Image (cartoon, rainbow, N blue to C red; front, side, top):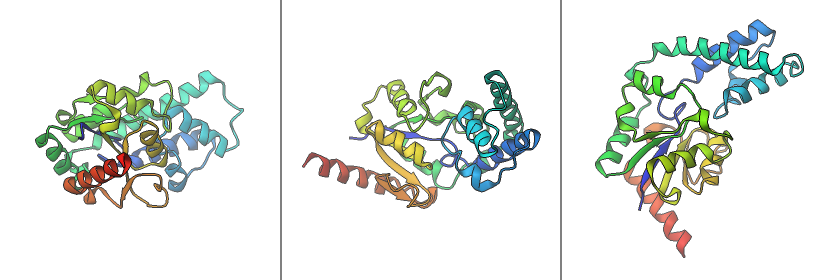
Length: 226
């Protein structure tokens, strides 16, 4: 029996990837690193500091900044990102998400958020969906970021549910790995090859049909128990 749906935020509830890209691009220009949207895809699902480390390595500048300077750079990027996401409105909710949240509520399924973003609450507020969530895991309290399962396990604990009876929704391979490591049922949203480790993959949020999800989960549980 499914006890909870646990969602990632970026690329699942809304798509803030472009705002992240603009913020990282601006920071890159300041320190002499040019990035494109393809590189930005590699930052999906990972923490801000780890994203910065990848960018520094990409620009052959990994030895040019102290830890204190790195924290300052990551903070600067985040401040710019927070300005950009003030533009977000309920119109930015991805297709099919509201219906899925409503179905979950109607069927007494708890709803949690397991996002690496430390800006999750203001984003959910801007989208007007924060009221759907029973628990929002605090990424700043997680020792290990995705692909470690910590953030999803934190969400399950906060919801007071067994991870085995949870379904996790992700658009990044690191996130799918995190869900699987948490022993939850993983649903990937996006490219099938990239998300091949997910138990079930849909091309977009528009395909997140509640009854189909329940059917897929029940079938998986039945096969597992055989």
